[in-house]
Image (cartoon, rainbow, N blue to C red):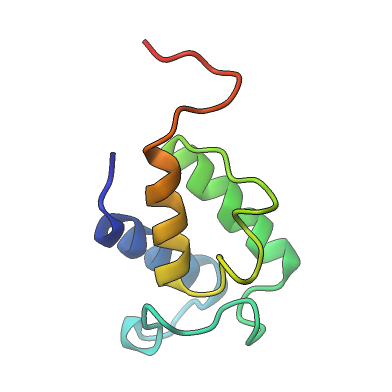
Length: 94
């Protein structure tokens, strides 16, 4: 299980590389609005969700990724960290 800081850092790097190439990491704080500001459009959000699910072995549903819970890096990291404390639905753990 990863810490919120680890998830935040990984998410920030992905967003910077994928959606904001060349942008300074300092320009993307934990509280920068991503979806509501247009940094992430719907397609970019789906790409981020797929990356996070694979990277952190979680399943994110529509509730988890609603703008109220998935608009900032802090929101995203908190959501992913919370999902890591619950087993994946339909999958067994070894």
